[in-house]
Picture 1 (cartoon, rainbow, N blue to C red):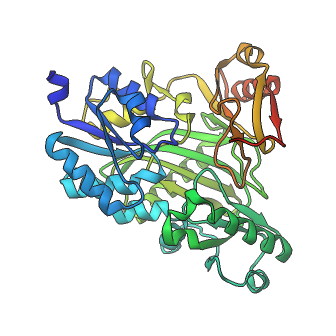
Picture 2: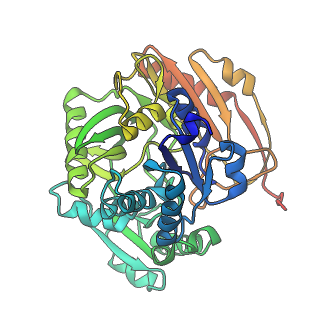
Length: 421
């Protein structure tokens, strides 16, 4: 047994659907720390982690905690880290059971459940839209008559804006309600249990949207990046595309965004680790739309570098393990990422223009994450993107222009009539 194998290790909880296994393992390798990967399918783990794996039940948290505790008896753990919505709650519960540093499970649960989140923030003094909760067997026509417009209908625990639909009148409300209930009947959703039987109704908040990436240490927030989202997100669906940092907001607005995030984090009771917050800004001030006890999703973290090329994953692992962090200052360059939207449903047959897209000045890379021959599903039913474009430049404007120009080069051939096996 090597020294590395005998070390206390970090357990990463990563679903099989996550893009981020390789990036976290690369970060662990660069830091020379021992990492085990816990996921919900053994064959996926073996492809990445060279045997240092454990299969964990992500649906039954009590069973998952027991499985992690059993693993820890033979492989002592110094931390358990969930990397997305599907695993952060389990990580906090397992950490509590093992006596490790952790956010309170109830705090993390509030970030993962949109109704609980709204309930907490309603009592925080922050701007909060009106909201209510419906069951999937409610009378949508009656609910539509009672709603205030415009409003947004949301599943409670789905990610990437899946199932989030704006309604401007009763007819749109009823259509959205039925569309969301069909999504909640999908096999991958019904496993969520009672949360898959409810729909949140929330007043629509107009305004530009930003995202804040941060790291909590003893309740103190360090802002790692503030992203502008230059494309309007007005509905009826809310497909995110471009993130660019540094923000072009005034210093006054940036300060207000940070203050609102700090207030939301305190209300939720989060104390430690990465957070990802999304806010809308209008004449009334900043509105906190959501806070996740996790870092930014997909491959978007690749747009961020700190100090001399340190990745976001390295920062997170160093923090969780108590390793020294030389700097949390982001690189001087402006950077950005585009999540490539899915233009239509069908089977992805080919992607053209990749080389041209990669040659655009300022573009760091173009990664297609959906294999050829695989079915693609746009919002609101889907929750994935075709891939990611990354760019760096001397200004946010230059980065945004490079991302748009690169995307314009790409040609996606999607067969709407094809069926996968």
